[in-house]
Image (spheres, rainbow, N blue to C red):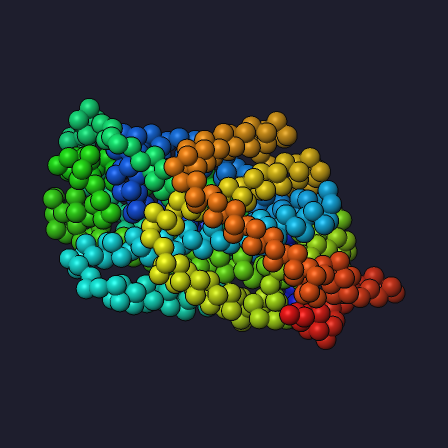
Length: 517
């Protein structure tokens, strides 16, 4: 096991210390926040296909998408438990095939991951504004709405300048308080449930909006890889944490939908964004305002948690390289303190997509502050230009690109590195992996085809976006020194042959990262 000494702190990276950081309970609530985080925004699904089909979609997504992707994410995160997260999955997998191919596919995967996560997070303030309107009655104008979004963005940026474990603790407490009214009201309304009357389909069906909103609600498991190096429990327990997160998503969506269906005058025409609060208001004004205020709070929590994850993805793109020991364990050196030595280093895989000096730094608490600022600005601009439907529908096509790459990366790792240590592995080896990937391709492929039929122009925009990424890649490879990956990796450390220790060259590192354009 490789040992990294950073300044006065010595840490065994790749080992499960089980102490400090994000607790098991807090991690489960973080999973919940980054996936469904309750029903807020799910009204769009009911508006599109009715209550009955909405409940069916929840079950199908949980069984055919959430559960398999949780298994896959558990294995990959236990194989690479670092704050690089899913950014390095493709880099590592395809490096076993061809380093140049790995560099290109890793770059394309990473860029689409970041865009998807940013647009997904950008939809959260939209839902927050809708429930804030429910509380206040109305918001004066677009300028007022803009400054509310600015307040959300700035507050999240400030909080993300601290350790992520602090964010997880705050979010855990708030989530529990917000979900209590839903459970109490469901128990209260059980005698009023009548599926034959309340769960009928509502034509015309808007399957495109329903499916993409479901994906928006129930995706996000892969993102948890970007905080796996900050957990304070054994990575062997990631699997159970993900499964509990899936169950929490299902219950947090099921109970409010069934309850609100008992309170709707007409389940085909009554639903709108913010309806959960309005419907609960028929029972009690206290319930209405508790749900509305809870939505504002929990969507703020979602946004704060998402910014923390995405900023770590941006940070990862600005790292020079990551290293793998000869036994397949990830060697993690994620602080900018002077690294005294790195032992038994074997394979180093370069990243260097963004300038390390500007974006790849962290503060004393380990927060990537510059990356947080970049994420906040981009999300603020997305909220100005795009509405909720455009955000979630376009994002399905962005997700498609890195979904294909990551499925291929996972199968490549299973084939090329079958014996590499994983603290969790999908049962039945390659057979189990094929079943999981097959279920994911079947479920997501079906969603993709259905949405493509109604939104082909969005697919074309996604193709244009990726063409822009490819153009940037090859232009940067030609003119930007940091993108000359093979040279950077070889010169970043020099080998002292007398004791076989790699030493960092700070002066050289600073010079190497300067772009030529």
